[in-house]
Image 1 (tube, rainbow, N blue to C red):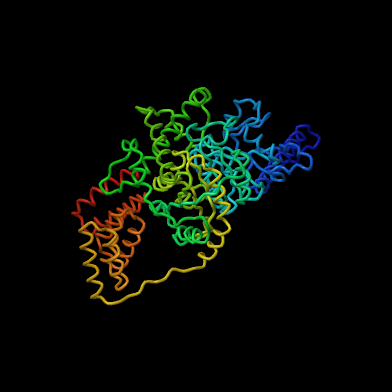
Image 2 (image 1 turned 90 degrees about the vertical axis):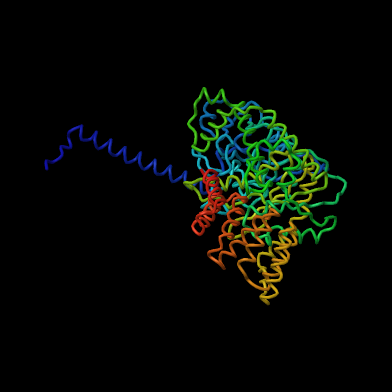
Length: 598
């Protein structure tokens, strides 16, 4: 190898370029490391750090402002003067000027003593409930770092859960405050539609949008509510009448001991609280919202209630897409932004949407508000799960399955379509995932709902602690002859369409003898009552006792389809077909389920 001629200027040029390249590479790595550490410090919640100081405190002897000393963050679809509102999209931010005014919601919070410290990441255009943003990254869920935080107000929920701020504001269209509140284990409040001014907030769907907020402490949730809702601090005390939506609790696998039982025990302890009533909400909506009938998919086995809730959520999406398209179609066509795949699908559906009669969508919304007002009046509170399933793992290739999607929006569509106020409340954990229950009150009773949450929460915490360490009581066995007699009585009651009586007889038979037929028969009665989760559990027990029980597989498939677990239902129906290939009902069910999954 020839020796380098160090006197040659070209050699020094090469050396200089190489050295510069090393320096540039080192600087790039340094910046990447700095960015990574920065994300770790704020959990990736903020898209932009800002500081908006509160208005001056009034001089003594006036009382301090109600939010003094509290910090907050806002979602990136809320205007701040002299900042560009990004809407979760680099393309939107690039093509828009700075805001000329600050949103009314932010001004109200500053006037009452709180400090704004930043704008938070959101799902692109507010279309989604996962909290993932392909352009700005996914905020880290402080409760479950390997799982999604929920969206679209993902950064706001993460900032609160990570204790970076005392509270945060976001928007809720189809669940965008409630889902991240549930997944991050904090409080979330969606106020009555139109109760908080949306001036200075980019809309997704004006008929569904609400300005909401999140907090770790119920007292902070309450104080922010009093400011934003502009409600009087004193109001006549009312009796509280709770309604537990039994059919909705069947959609999630959290034991009722940790949910419904906790609420019931707390109500027993507090004065002014009536014994809760139980209701099949899906069936109530089916009978009270007649305009939904045209949207309900007919099914030979699916109960009316769950079909109705799926129809309600489909109307919600049609309305959202129609209004989103009206708002942004021109900009989308002009800019042609690069979008995340999920957002692309959503917007494609919006752009191509052409409902034959838009008026029907608004009619459903009006009827739904009236139905909930008639149910809850001014002293009722509906109890339901906030979300049915635990959060997905990050970067899940499959994304939201059809079943998870349908279960989620069967719950979320109720407040969105009725305009009711809803509070998402942390209820401890199950299998290391946060549990979140929701209270819904009728439109305009926001103070009543906030007061209820504040009044109940310390008792809820106590009862959650008690129930988390409690264990269920086992059944006892007994005489086989007596159990057969009870089974026959149950069969007679079933034939007479006395479903509740049939359940009672089968239950007594099961206490005496663990028999697959008894469980399968009780499951059939539960199906008639619309108690799908109980039916599924009974069929599972029957199958564990008798692996060739075709009726148990069929009935479990029916229950699972009604609970929107389509893939599991299909597995059961196929198992029944293996055992009984000529079963025509199973063949029809298999075709329908394959169509639902596809």
